Image 1 (cartoon, chains in turn brown, blue):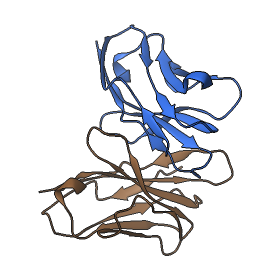
Image 2 (tube, rainbow over the protein chains, first blue to last red; image 1 turned 180 degrees about the vertical axis):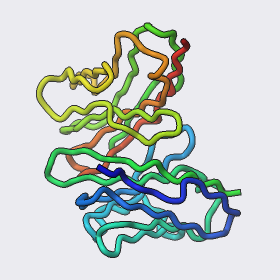
Image 3 (cartoon, rainbow over the protein chains, first blue to last red; image 1 turned 120 degrees about the vertical axis):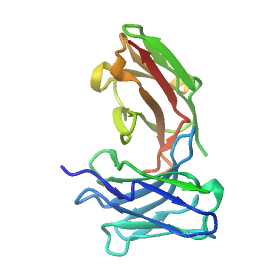
Image 4 (cartoon, chains in turn orange, brown; image 1 turned 120 degrees about the horizontal axis):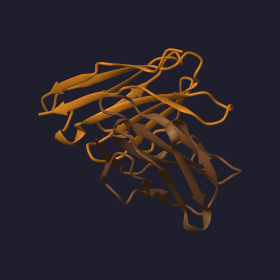
Length: 114
Length: 114
């Protein structure tokens, strides 16, 4: 079974620039999550999609972060404009619904804002 | 909102030593509990999970964890660690009022000396 694909693996940008991350979940997984993992901390949920609808985006800084999952499959997370404190690993995960509870995480995108 | 505490941020052990990593959560309702591992340069992987039933759960690679409801704890154990267990370990909780959202602890970085 193919895993959760994320790209790019690494990104370095200057503050106030914009950046986008891409995620392709495991085929058939209806639920997709974006987590932010700041160095030295555990992952924190940013947004959860069920198919192409948003289930929970309460912890997404909506003034600068946006995410979409237009066709209910792959997803993009955008930051505009980036701040220094956005430096983190952005993890995408997906899960099946109603079959227990099991995430599969991608390898993440490491963002450095300078 | 629930929170998860991992008291040991860094642990250094010699091979064959026993391991116990602490995890406590703050939520009085029903929870699902998880331990994830992140090997250097790799994505988060599920070690084990507890939903219900026997509070002593066994996972992959000889790891086990015990859910003690009265102590709000879910400590991870392994009788004899190996150099290959060097990784970062994250405890995570899903509360029954949080949909599929996972709340992670801050992680424990384990180094096993050969």
